[in-house]
Amino acid sequence: MVAVRRAIVPFLLAGALLLTGCSDDVPAAPVPLTTRTVTPTTVTSAPSPVTSPVLSSSVAAPPPVASGRVVVLDPGHNGGNGSHPAEINRQVPAGRGQTKPCNTTGTATNAGYPEHAFTWDVAQRVGKALAGKGIRVVYTRQNDTGVGPCVDRRAAIGNEAAADAVVSIHADGSTAAGANGFHVAYSAPPLNAAQGEPSTRLAQVVRDTLRTSGFSTSNYIGGNGLSARSDLGGLNLSTRPAVLVECGNMRNAAEAARMTSEEGRQQYASTLAAAIEAYLAS
Ligand code: ZN
Figure 1 (cartoon, rainbow, N blue to C red):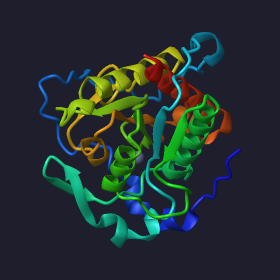
Figure 2: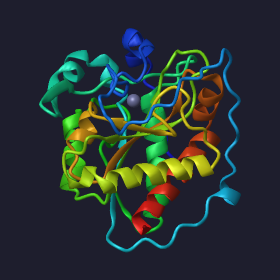
Figure 3: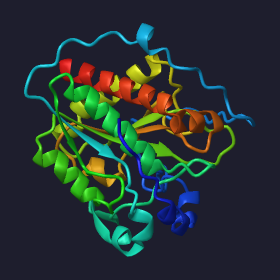
């Protein structure tokens, strides 16, 4: 069981940023990719009901994973980011010749449950499941009270670990009415071989496993639960198969309830762990 310390002060200090959502994860402009498919936005006026995942009956047990595999788990943001604006606003390399802020505060539910606490807890649960299968797990941060690390450092951790898979865990903060569902982002156009077929396959396996487990794909970003992105530093700088999962929208009442509950976080974690196992075995 993972103890989570909720960072109240950073949350208060970062209120303005938090209202803007998971700002590091939201594209500033449409991604100019010919391969990107965009589903027409069909946002309803009321939150859509979220079907409860039925994990035990819908997720097939993946084949055994070969020994010596390494997975890097990257819980988005950090509990101390909100109280250290100068450090997290520092510009760092983000790939494709761009720079971006070192890190961001992330978003929160309307009731104040912060994204960094959600991602930290889910990552710990995923890591515990993977370690139980003999997979070596490396985290990009060691607690939920620190600052950063910056997006370029997060990518470097995956690269230095020679990770077989890198999974960044986030949750979104869209205030659009009815916006809900998960999506999986991957770097495109790819900047190296790992960002090609391996990363897109990892994205598809994670998408398929989440969907099979009863999680709804996003109705407001990407297409069919996938989002090709050229602006995410952590993905751009990765030389390993890497994806970023936006587990859902923390501003959606039903998804916020799931993310806030320990049971809900375990459902996300069990599904992500099964997805990573399936990818490694494929
Ligand atoms: Zn985020």
